[in-house]
Amino acid sequence: MDVAIFLGALFLAGGVSVLQGRALVGLGSDHYVHLFLVNVIRENGRRLFTRIPRLLNPAYCSAYPLFLHWFLSFLKNEQLVGVSRYYNPVVNLLQVALTYLALRLVPDVSPLAGMLTALFAATPQFLHAFSARNYGLTARPLGLLFFGCFGYCVVRLRLEGVSLPWMGGALLAGYCVWGFNTFAAQTMLLAGLLLLAVFGFWQMMALAAASVLLFVCLHPAYGPSYLFNTFRFSKAYATDLAPLFILNRRPSIWRDLILDCWREIARQRQHGLSYTYSNPVVMVVCLNPLVLLGACLAWSGDATPPFVRLCAEMSFAGLAAFLLTSFRPTRFLGEPERYVEMMSFFSAVAGGWWLWHRFGMTGLALVGVYFVGCDLVQLVIAQMTRKHISDDNAEWLGVADLVEREMNGTPVRFASNNEDMIKWLMGRSWEFARLNSADQDYAGYRVSQVISKWPLVRLEAFEALLRMYRINVCLLDRANYAEVFSSGVNAPQRQHLLFENHRVRVMRLDW
Image (tube, rainbow, N blue to C red; front, side, top):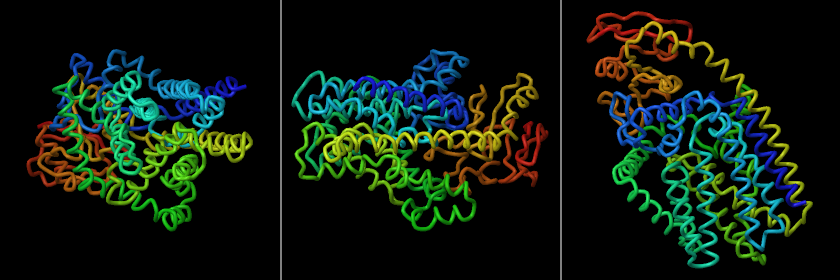
């Protein structure tokens, strides 16, 4: 029976992920940024770099570690189409399989391994329709996988004392976290600090520090540069970009619950429901409620197996990290719900054990039915999202082929007054000038001087960028402005209209 439940969990996680991928892969702009990084690593002889090639204005690796792109650079772009579609489902299946194996190795929870694995596999937040993992290339699936492996090894070390296999596993998984996913690295540090401060659980912080030291030693040029520029990016994001981006889009995740969600639903029902569905508090309470049970178990007086107790402490650390990063001054540290998502394995163990302890298999089954119902609803949401995004972009995405025909082999130096639109075109073998990172220079302007309202670029800064890098093709989002150099000052010798509709204008600039 236990094995049958495990196989059902595999089928659910794999099936939902595949169906979501078929609906959504390629419909996120970040997918094309990752494809760009794969291409430039391949062009760079598969060597890691510090300054990003083919970006005209100086831009350095930060926030996006390059290990995933390095591995993918050994594939052809045609092969990446299939990889993009099935990469997330395969990693999800691997996580579910490793979860079952990991729980079978712990005598205290081994009899419940199948049910706890099923709860993990069906956790609705794990299969959220708006997760970047569903939209193509991203390091997030591997970030979840490697953080889960790291956390499990750390918990076993905490239980068993010094153990070379678990220590080696934690070091290797931690090294992979630093190389693949910035958010997983943030979770190691923040959760490690919380575990140390609240429970005296020092192993996570110690091994996070040891793994970053290993990362730097193995990559003496790339490693320190990536860490330094990621710190610069975070600092600039906090002061300059966050107010224009995440805080402008969603001023307060807590105010949402009493005002903004209801106001958005009243204005336009479908948009309002989408806005509510992506609220971090709603996601945690409705789509990952086991973290709440797990966090409470960490403070209960119940007689709890040691492994389950440590999983409860991990759940508490994830929930505490969520709360600490849910306020305006700290939201630059990323979407707060992702700290909870990172702890999904530990929440499933702790919360699931509590349900079984209090209500038996009936409690586990009822929560499982609720989870599966949420997952089926999210498949419908994925299909609706596909139609919305496809309709929204159909009016202008075809301009890339037109540009290449019109340029007739002339190298393209490309820019746009909409920072989101340019990302969709970065799969092309062009050179780009864009705001790649919040800390970088944009033709002498700071990000707060460049962006009027994300993702729209102010005219003065955009014209300076066009001049400085002799951009020969620019895409103008008409919702921002439809002309450049209208005054004639420092203008190119000739502007030629390549394409125009009610949404965009594409101009060729001859200097």
